[in-house]
Length: 143
Length: 143
Length: 143
Image (cartoon, rainbow over all chains, first blue to last red; front, side):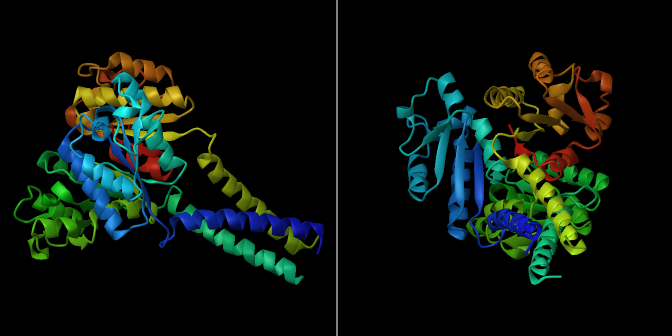
């Protein structure tokens, strides 16, 4: 086997692995991934979104769900303002990730202690919504 | 030609075909694909969405459009409640796919016969919205 | 080096470059890309969207942002109707692309001169929202 052939084979393998990674993330049978964008204050819309997530997990239990709350939507994960503390808790226990936007928290003087248990934070909710789609291949869902 | 060379060539061809499939779906000149997410009850918003689809098909006639109606948005495709029976019918004839969420239908006691002609169903509207993006590479559009 | 090996190597290189292009667009460290979909008339929601963009550019300054205004959302970029002329101007100067839908403009009798400075147009806002995602790999964001 010539050095050239070896090089080509290695390149082919590298490409194959890259391709396989991409295929693994999109082929049927692998977990779905979705970022749920919550920026509205209406408890009804927020609750509908949580119910959508429950339904997603019923049909596709392995789905990776991240709920990004920012702007007027941060109330969903604030202890003092949410109408859905219990539903959020149940979903957190099922592995759903909830994050609040630190920009919004700063602006509204919300501290981490003010958030429901298990809720994380991200520097910017808007960037997170973009990054989950572009970097991590998440689908977008706006309740 | 050595066996190694043959192997590398076959691998290259396999990769090439996989790559080509991916390119075919995204390159200019191939049909666009979009999932239209309808979960709001307002006839005005629903009608604007249908008009958006009409405009899409005017500029890019080959576009594959799937309209997913769930939650409060299912009324768009219910005979008894829709304000847009005719517009839906026209779009169905143009090849637009409309589906209603079976979770929503169960909850609201809507039967398949209650849906406009040509409207299909899916087990979960929310999962469908995610799956079209992740599995089938559809763009997302919320009217 | 045989002709076959050369062929395989060239094919491998071509694939490698295609793969690299794809990887370049998605890997961490490369600019994010996002299409912001504005189709609502509420100045509050429009303003929140502009603030989201400002926050995105604060955390990820290289992000390519395109704001597509159509239907009831075109008012954001109309001189006579916007509540956010200054904020739009600031973002245009930062490189954010704003486009108005020509279908909407025709319907509402809006001329190019009626748009804020630096705002472009596209034949169809809805198609643009789809195309940016499918052709150019943009994330979707609805304020």
